[in-house]
Image 1 (cartoon, rainbow, N blue to C red):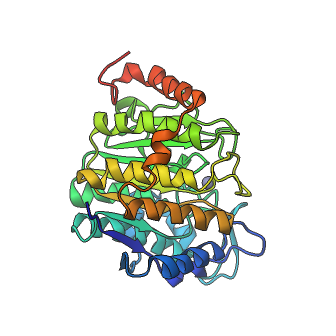
Image 2: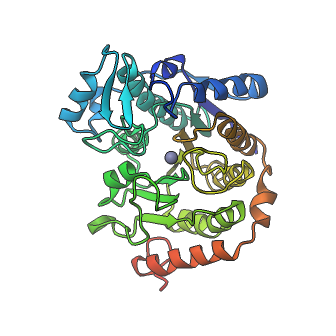
Length: 349
Ligand SMILES: [Zn+2]
């Protein structure tokens, strides 16, 4: 099946300067944009973002925090938090990063493409309602999910977060809601030290947050086996109208901030899985870049994602052949904890 791919990119994203030695640097995107032009030219629909509106940003962020971010505009250097600096153009880039994901959503909803990858920065999944953190200023995907509900009336949105860090900002936004199902795999002992197995959602959202805690030495087989067992079941049980991916690539073994031991092959397997569960079945798929701090590992991993998205069958063998006792044990643990909620297991205990 020929499914078209949209790519959001913009040179403004390079104007968010984080300072010498900061891992979330503009060079991450420079490498990715170069690879896109050299290897994938003509194979995607280029989408130019526009900044999010104040109304859209405030679907997730408090007015006081938005004012704080606005106050950094044209100031050479501000520390929003100890790990999240902003430069003169960071405010503009942050509005455009959220806007880039919204642009991808609009393209998907208009049927311009079946899947879309937003190569934006700053990243978003750690940004809380009232606070920056973990290199994130605005929560790009949380804003997009809220807007998908408001503007397009979607009632079931699945967010998959395969960044090695837990997306505490996305979890916070939807912890009490069932309209957004949040599934995150991460190394729990790392920043931001949230996302334990037992964090499953609250109130009407109970059972709609699924945290999969990976061991620090988790490899391709462990993660792919786990996803191959759990994700199809979640998609079938929850029946999402839109699938979004917080696509971080810092679970790669060469990542300076990561802990796990994935290779780029894992991202071919994951790419083939989300393609098969989403666009191949008519469910739009929106991926947004989160972490990934080794330029080489990031570029090779995104390349594998793109190959899997663009070429039916690519990565399927890697996924199918993954065989891991630990992956199976992690899947069983997820079923054991989530069975009682009956959200994606049909009430199985
Ligand atoms: Zn990360």
